[in-house]
Image 1 (cartoon, rainbow, N blue to C red):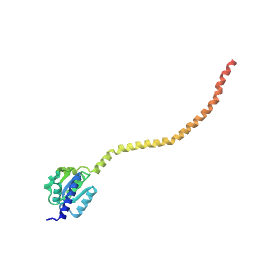
Image 2: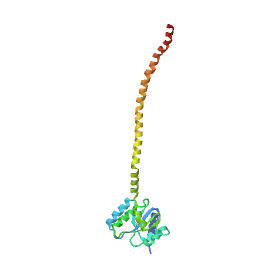
Image 3: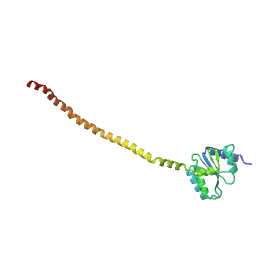
Image 4: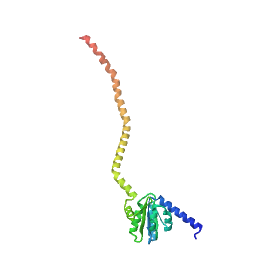
Length: 205
């Protein structure tokens, strides 16, 4: 009979699995049979860098964790060696990486997959693996908008540059206006006597 300590540890493991599955947006269950230590290390590194949590799990613990949830339907595939990959943000990373790995490793197989707590078929899982990754989607979006955004940026910069140039030229223009206006104001009194002298010529006729 298991000791109290063992039972408590088991409960903690089940609770952790339940929380992990509940927080994941997507996950993949695989049979890792025949995987070498070297290949396993490389696989874990790639998954970790993609934000995917990957670990070996006991089938009995997974059964307890999914009991009473929609994932309980995958009970039939929980046999043999089992590893679980889950992601909290990326829907395709786990499926894409594990599917590619399975292609080069005969004994490594995908057992099941799920999205938002719902089990999906292996066919859907394979389709999911073919979708672009988040990074690829972002790169595609950037490429689509790159030219328009570059033109927009250049237009904005041109406006900024023109505004700066106008501000720099403004004092010079004001100075020129002041210089031109000054002589005109000074000349006005000089012309006035000529206009006043005109009536004086009438008596001479």
